[in-house]
Amino acid sequence: MPSHPTLAHQSLTRQGQHPARRRLLKKAAGFALLGSSGLAGCGFKFQARQQSLSFQRVLILNESVNPVTQGLSQQLQEQLTSLYGVQMVAQRADAQLVIRLQKSRLETVAVGFSSAGRPRELEVRASLYARLENAVGDLVQPAVLLDLRRTYSVNDSEVLAAAESERFQIENITRDLQQQLLRRLVRIQSLANPVRSPSS
Image (cartoon, rainbow, N blue to C red; front, side, top):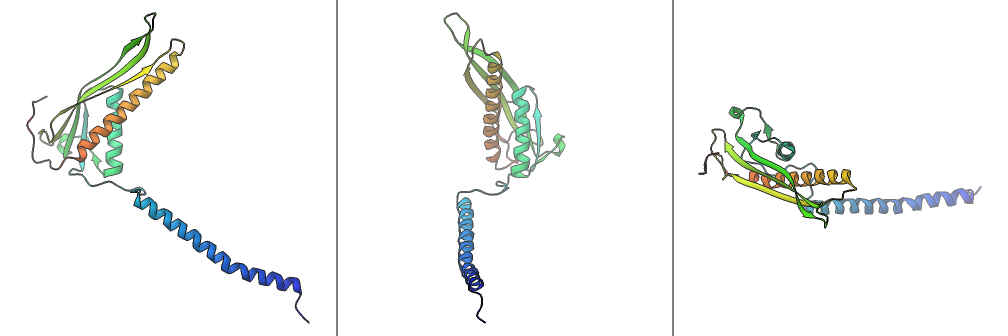
């Protein structure tokens, strides 16, 4: 008795789908491989650490406490530990590098006024001295003054918005300072050759 035509058709259809399905899977795998190669070519790495530094134990001394230096200390710790595998220590005797944040100032100043004499533009000003020292207190780079300013507009009827704008600018300044200081840390080649600089 001949096989049922419907069953035979279904069997042939299923058999015919297998090569097509395999081709689709191969294409999908190829696209996935191409995508991962493209990401690698762009320098993208999953959970990748950066180049090794010339030091592995760091102490951060925040000698002028304000929102900028507090945020800067925290961000530096996070970046150094997560990206470079640096260990943060609590005592100078245990540190290879000491980061001293000194003479920090943070202020908000009116720089623009309305016709009625009311502030319309405010400027957040943040500055600090950064000293990078080895374990015995010698500078490994010249001390540097970091100074950043950000301006924003204000409106008398939006007091909360003005406060939020100030906080936002402080956060931006903190991130910029952290990036500047991190670039200086990466450039340190040796801790054994101190530089000459006026004492703090």
